[in-house]
Image 1 (cartoon, rainbow, N blue to C red):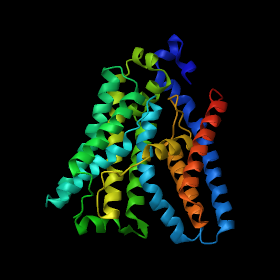
Image 2 (cartoon, rainbow, N blue to C red):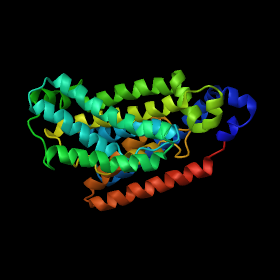
Image 3 (tube, rainbow, N blue to C red):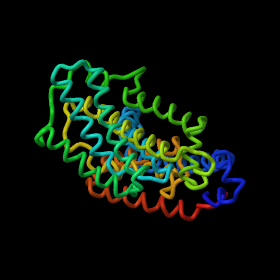
Length: 331
């Protein structure tokens, strides 16, 4: 994809060039991802009749909602050519900050805003170091992984925070026309992000920066601001996921979010996002999250131990990268 932007003509209009080739290639990849999901559903339905029942399918969607939320933020970061390994600890820090305020009697809306602000501040810190200090995203967010986890543990003394208001829990554990609220929340967020990525100048900026940063800079794309913004988005969405889990559990644990970055990267990669940058899909990432959720649910119904599920996730990531490598540069 970067080769499409190396000559002078393309360098002056990087986003436009990317946009012209993007829809067809992504729709084809999304169709392949959807086919993979259908095959998984068929296999597990044949092995266990409970798998394809309506309650279990809703359960899969609800279980997948947290990973989908994290993965959507990760997708934007990956498209821009970066990576965010700190999403799990960011979620934990956001959760304990919001839960502590709720337990102290602060109005729930203010506590929610504080949790979101905490996650976005973590993303701002990451993005600023990457954009202005010239540090590699892997190193910065790896440091953030330790830093934010330590802050969450220090703040709580390593203990969970209870006392989550019942009204907050009731909303998170409720439903809208039979659809769990977390699924509705992620659906709304995904729709907004699809518009941002596919129908806004900022979406073009992200694609341009990930496709060829220097060409984007020459074309006048605000590279630093774009990078910072995607990390702020990633931190904010990590906070949303943390609030959903806090509402479901009725507590915020400073150890929350362990290996969430692995699941998020897996969902994005399955959905067609390239770790080389410049390519990704909101729809594909959602499908990737549901594939992982379906796989784990099916394996659980078959009484497969959890560490084999982790093995399956790792294999899926490698296969997704091999597919991306094999198809990169085609069409």
